Image 1: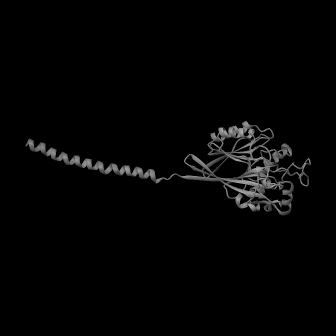
Image 2 (image 1 turned 180 degrees about the horizontal axis):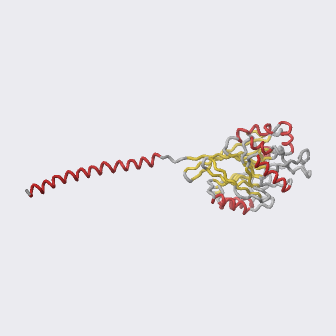
Image 3 (image 1 turned 90 degrees about the vertical axis):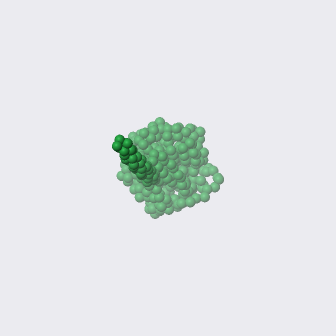
Length: 334
């Protein structure tokens, strides 16, 4: 009897162990399979924002006369599609917006007022209607009508819904940050002229990084007119901007298209040249560069790709897509 009980227990135990072992092999592979499916079922989400930059915008002298005769769409109509092709469009506003009459119109090269600009009040709404979201007012002409002209410019831009950076009155030096499709883009100004402090710009870059900007863009007004390559002093500024964390530099002031440099992970366009301007004596000053940037963010990493388009300043005041430049160096300012 004891022998039968002992073997009966053994006979019962063996099937139970087999069942338990079988159960283990059934349950655990299913669990592992589901975990793998959960991980692979979520693709990495790609977030994309586009932003477009143009060079110097000057709306006085001959350009103002053409706008008075034909209307603003005549000046900008040839590039409307280009300007509206990005989520954010920005440029350098080369003078103040005031209700003062033009003093440069009709003057000759060398006259006292020939290079003293003011743009008509509707200029702000015109820029907005053609897709501009932000402009830099940090340049050597923004105080052509004094501090009051700067304040007037800021009021009219704000009323038109256009953001601005580079206030030469020093009231606002913080970065402007815009978020598009989950991508945060910061805009910071640098102005070599009018007493602007380089430290303002470097601090703006650092602040933008601390505020979580995915891309930091510095819009600079600097360098030497009609020169393709940056002078040593500007090269040194570029390197300090890179070290502070800048991702992209967009330069203006030389009035011609300048060189492009990749300094580590930072790209620097020394000068985009003119966008709307009445300089016609040479193909170099008549030709400007428009840069469209696509920022692609995957998780916390953002990459930039660039698309470049050349435009021409026609003698009738219009800006149109396309240009052919010669190797001649501009020599006679207008």
